[in-house]
Length: 209
Image 1 (spheres, rainbow, N blue to C red):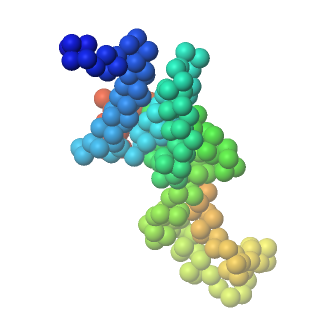
Image 2 (image 1 turned 180 degrees about the vertical axis):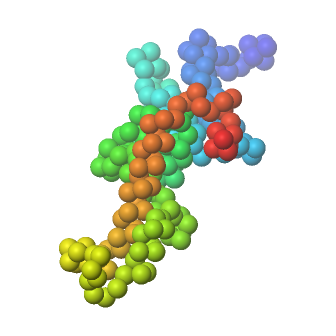
């Protein structure tokens, strides 16, 4: 048809078709990512990093890439981290989803921050959850509220001095204890959960059990 209307330059050659296939491969990955993250019947934030990793892998140049495709990939990859950054929210969401706890991008992020998975999750809990909603030891609170100002016969001087040290310390001891308890729970969760726990990809079902 194009040759008949004297437009041979518009006829696609083998290289054009190869370039189109490469572009479609990249764009189809972007389309899939958008569709998955746009779901409104299930939580999707835990999928951000794994989809990001897949998109980034599609932008890595290969030996058989044409000049055009290579240039396109390099251009897109040069601004990728700025346009699609790894955020603390995305990392926390991934860690709370047993399927994505061991992503390389998550490990690299935490390594760069000099922290561990359980410590990172504990920090996020203490940052975003109200202090009054954090777990606390009722026995500790009761004993603190009933402390006397002087040693009694049932309490040694060492215990009394220890209670004063806690009372007059700059940092809140209860916050530290809460953080330790939270970190311990995070460690237990990360150790005992597995990708198989999320049946049929139902993350809400996993957390409701």
